[in-house]
Amino acid sequence: MSRTSRTSLHRTAVASATATLLLALSACGGSAAAGGGGTITVTVGYQSKTINTVTAGTLLRSLGYFEKQLNALGDGHSYKVVWQDYATGAPITAQMTAGKIDIGSMGDFPLLINAARGKQLGRPTHLVSVTGYNLRGGLNTIVTAPDSKLSSLKDLKGKKVSTSVGSAADGTLVRALQRAGIDADKGIEKLNQQPAVGASALSAGSADALSQFVAWPGLLAYQGKAKALYDGAELDLPTFHGVTARQDFAKKRPSVLEAFLKAQAQATDYLNAHPVAAAEKVAKATRLPAEVVYLYNGAHGISTFDPALKPQLVSALRKDVSILKAAKLTGDVDVDAFVDDQYVKKALGATHTQKLAAAPPAAASEVWPEGAERTQTFTSPTELLAYLSAHRDGVRAAYVPDATTGTLWFADKAVWVADGRQLLPFVAPSTAQAYVDVHSGARIVTYSEALEAAS
Image (cartoon, rainbow, N blue to C red; front, side):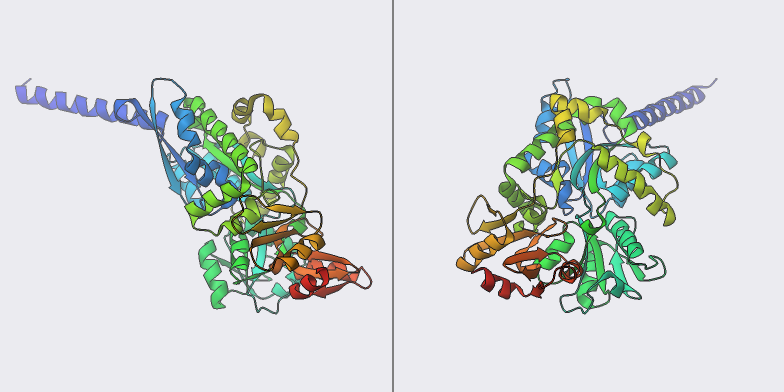
C-alpha cells in the first residue's frame, strides 16, 4: 500500500471515530452535555409571562436557587444553566423532542401534547412536578372588549373568538361552549393566535372575545382593555401547570433533576412566605404590573403553588385527553406512564406527604396599600369596600373573591350585587345574574354604588 493510501485510510478512521464519539455524546447527553473543563450545561425552557410557572421559571431564575443547588452537588462538575423563555408550551416541547431542552414548564393541555410528541418521536418525557394550580379551573378566563354587549357564553355563537389552540385556555373554551350548547368547532369562528396577538385582535375589534391563560385576562382587565365574560372556575375542573423533563436526561442526570426540584420547592416556599416581594420580583423580570402578578400569585391568589403531584390534578389530566383527541391534536396518551413522581418525592423528602394533602388557602379579600410590603386581609368584601371608601387614595390594588367560585378579581373590575346589607362580587356578569335570579331582592349595582353602600 502506498504512503498516500495509508494516510488517507488513517484520516478516514480518525474522522469516523470522531463522528461516532460525537454521536454517542449527543445521544446520551442531549443539551445537558459536558463542555470544556467538565462543565455541564443544563437547558431550562420556561414561560416568563405565564406567571403561575414562576417557581420553575421566572422567580426561580431571579432567586438563583437552581444554580446554588447545582454548586452544592459536589460531584466534581461545574454547571451552566441556560434559561430559554417562550410565550407558550409548544416551542418548549419542540425543543425538548429535539434534545435541546432538558427541563420545561407548561400548562396541562400542552403537557399532554408534550407526552404524545415525546413518545411519537422517540424522546419520551415525564411530568415530574406541579407549579401553580387552581382546583376549580380559575387560571383560564374568557374576556371581551370593555364596551362589548356580550354578557354570556351563549352570546358567543357565530362570533370570532381568539385562543391558542392546544392550550389550557383552549380547553376551557371548548368545555365552556359545550356546556352552553354551542358546537366548539362550528358554533364559533376560532382564531388560533398567540396570547399577545389575540389581545391585539380584541383591542382592534377583529376578535369578539379572547380565551386565555394567566396572566393575560387579568392584565387586560387591569389595563381597562377587557372585561370578564366567563370565569374558568365555573367548570369546577382542576387546571394546572407543571414541570416536564426528558426521560434520557432524568436517567443520566437524576441528581441534577432533583437539584432543580429542590430549588423549585425553595422558590415555592419563598413565594408563599413573601408574596408581595415575589410579585415585585416577577414584575421586574417580566414587565408585568406587580398588581396583576399578585392577583394570581398572591397570598389568596388564583394560583396555589405546590410541587407535589396531587391525585386531583393527575385525575384531571386524564380527563383532558378526550378534548385533545377530539381536536385531533393527540391520540391516546398514557397519563399514568407520563407521570413520574419519584424525583419530587426525593426532592421534598419528609414534607412530601404533607404537601400532597395540603389544600389551597381560604378565599379572602385583600388590599395592597401604597408603599406597603404586606397586604391587608378582610373577613368580607363588604368590609373591604368600607376600607376603600374611607381610603380613596393610597391604595395600590384591591382584590375580592367571586361569591360563587372563589376566583380572586380586582374589586373595581368585579360585577357587584347588593343583597340586603351584603355586597357580593362576581368575576363575570352571567354568574352575578344567576345569583340575582334566585335571590329575591338582590340586584346588580355599579362599583361606585357598592362603595357608597359600604361607607
